Length: 130
Image (cartoon, rainbow, N blue to C red):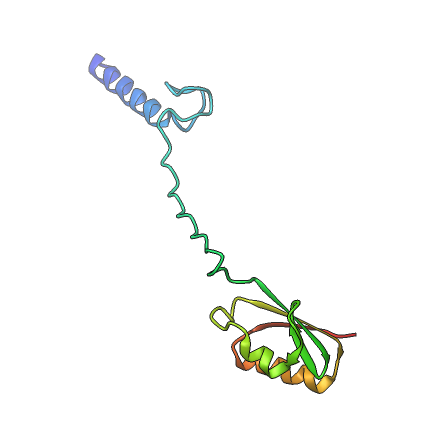
């Protein structure tokens, strides 16, 4: 083989080794074995989710209790179920889960409340009754 051909093969081998030096540990000038010598492309930073203020905070869950013919939300006083349903914030109705505790409620009242909630846009309604 002529010396120019040997030099060409040596250059070709050197280029292949340089190209693969980040892929094969211990082959080339990488830092520690298995660690690439070139910096990895950083993952795009995810923007921080805006933290809502206490006034804008959306409840993740609304708890309603049906007692006889009346309803109440949390510790608020009991009222007509249609009034309680109408007073709910419907801004994020599709994302809010509504838990209805209906163990002491009349069946017809519970069904009216459930229908009112669905018409208001609340899609995640769970009724607990024994």
